[in-house]
Image (cartoon, rainbow, N blue to C red):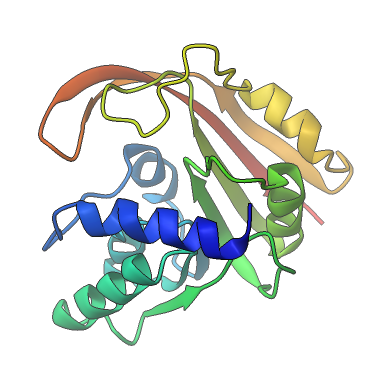
Length: 208
């Protein structure tokens, strides 16, 4: 499918959601980054911007990327309204296009799932190469289907963190897997419903 189709789809998804005044960050980000010194972060598929705003409040400089113009425009306005406009840079970018980003201490990719063609392994490999030495790539994927998900395919396979790491194919001499597990949590959907879901969490550190 074309870039136009993907943009139209994701603009529609975000436009249909209520505009959040102060969106919550993802719990896997907060538990991972809480103890890290602030630096430069890249938020891939930033969505409603909860992660970017949380990082910016902790003095990170954040580049927040999404294919949806609705998402990045809302986030830019939110960042300004919270006095964080100088710490959050929003970019509308299709990750199927060449990766123009580099020089980060943290790259976050939360729930980077799409019904459109996307070479996720190539995107995540490029993200890992965009890290400085000592930087971390945090990949959090769905390990189960929430009731409010746009994808209700009963036959969907959610790759394990180790499968994701193998697909990325990073050289162990330069990158170290620091975490690869499948924790469960109670999640709240856009309409306020709650459900127990599984996350697939992969944390990779660039060592050289």
